[in-house]
Image 1 (cartoon, one colour):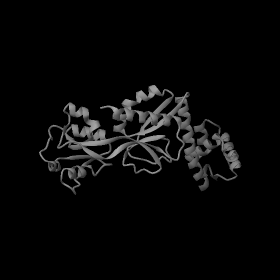
Image 2 (spheres, rainbow, N blue to C red):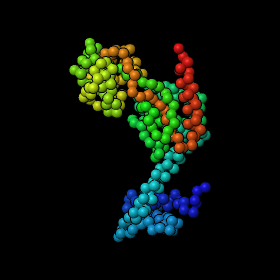
Image 3 (tube, one colour):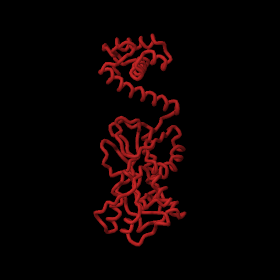
Image 4 (cartoon, one colour):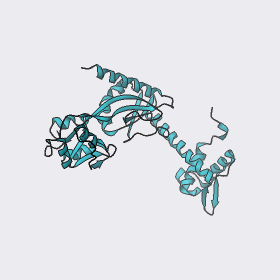
Length: 297
C-alpha cells in the first residue's frame, strides 16, 4: 500500500517542477496553461501536505530550498515514468508493451527479421526498440530487457545466450588479400572503440603476439563496414553482418578464415524486478527460436 498521506497530487508536482525550471510562478503558469494564482495555490497545498517549506521567495523570483531541489529531482523522474507509462498504455490499450534495448547491427540483422514471427504469435505485445551501444545498469532504466555483447560478467541480471560471434578480417578488393598476417600492419586498420584489442588478438591468433597496432576508431559496425567497403582500411567484422558484401564482392577476406570473437550476444533482464508477462512471452519465444536453429542441419 502507498502512504497516501504524503503522496502529492500531480498538479502540485507539475507546478513545483515548472517553477524549479523556470524560476517564476508566472512562467510556470504560462507553460501549464494556468493562472499565476492557481500555481501559487498548488505550491501552498504541497507545502501544507508535506509540512515543509519548499520555496525561497526573492523579489520576483522563486527558488527551491536545497531539500526541495533534492525532492523535485526525484519527482521529475517519477513524472517522466508516469508519462512513459501513459504513452505505452495509449499505444497498446489491449495488451502489454516490451521495451527492449538493442545493439544496432545485431538488432537490425539478427533480431529484426525474426520479430514479425513473434508479433504474429503474440499480437497482444507491442515491442518498442531503442539502441544502446554498450551494456548498462537497469536500475534507472525503463527497459524490460536488452541485448548485450560480452562474457556474462554483468551484475544482477539473468540472461539467455543468443549467438556466439565470429569475426573476419576484410577489406575492399583493392587492399586484399594479403600474403601474410603481419602485412596487415602496412594497411590502415579500422576498429570499434569498444573492442580496441581485436586486432592484437587477430595478430596473436596468426602467430604475432604482443602487438597492439593503432587504428581508426568507430563507435558502430555500420559506419566501420562502409569505411571498409570504400577502401579506407581493413576491418574485423562479424560474419553475420557481411555475408552479402562478401557474396557480391564489395569486401574480400584479408587473410585466413574467421576467428572466434571474445564475447557472445545475450538477452539480459534484471533479476531484482518482477518479470512482466510480455517479457516472459518474449524469452519463451526466443528460447524456442534458438532450439529450432540448433535442430536444423
